[in-house]
Length: 388
Image (cartoon, rainbow, N blue to C red; front, top):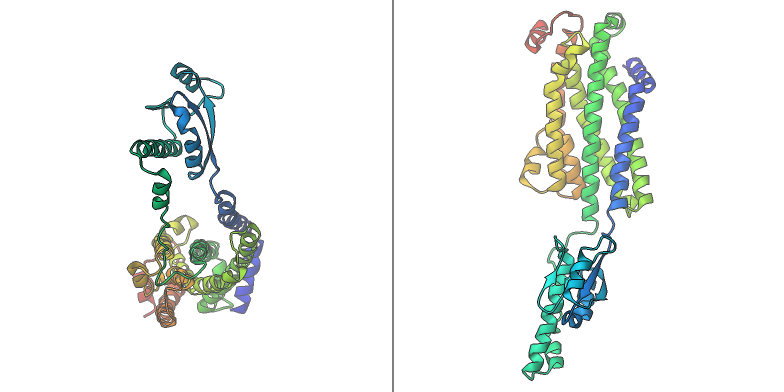
């Protein structure tokens, strides 16, 4: 097993496909880490040019004050009449965004929502002050009476700090696990088919037993995947820390360890299944059809993992935790979010190990009795019965 594992590790390290996949995965990871830091800042402050006509001059200071709450900047321009306002709205160079008169707000086509809100607030405030003064009511007293502080908001069970960051880490963990499990499971399958179609497997079986060949192949490629995953995690944490996306690098230690654990369990399950499926075909052209059910299963696991990252304490995530085929992508985000206990993790792990034990028996039998059979595709039932 050690010799086979070392052979697989060395061969895959030299493979150009490994280099390309590593570069693509790294590019996607860096994009996930750096793009939020670049585009996730506060939106740019809006700026509007407003013309004032007739009584609209009274509203000018209030419009500027109300726009600060949007937030936006307003440049005021005094106009002689409404005709000049229409002309400035339709001007080709430096047009106005709106013209305010005593009884209307005039725009060219689509009114800017932020500006409309500021103008309406300013007009209501100015007209309210005018009506209060006409009724002989002290405007200062009214202003003081309306100056009521907002109610303080207190949560009985406030979320711990860094919850949003944990959710982002959980989502990135699921994405990485999905890519790693699918890619390395397919690599195992491709290696099995290549050896079978080139008849190299006949030479290998003269020196090692099928079980040792299967175990060595899974271990060698899995070790390569583990090294790649750890390296990607280290680069991702460094990039997130440098860009400020991750404020506390220590928070990433838990997700990285959980992600590694999810990869080890998930890879053991899927790589074994991919190897058994690949052993039933003799040509690489037939491989895609043979592993399609497994590919779809990984895709379903990915969808449930994303669901668990978004709603870690939901019913879907809770049920999927105990389904071995999807648990490796569902448990890690729930652990990162702190929504699963140690007992639940232990039970999920026990179920995965039990499923792996049963899968190893099936895969060993199918693998052993399909490797030397060429021609058409070997059905799983035929391979199983051949061992009786």
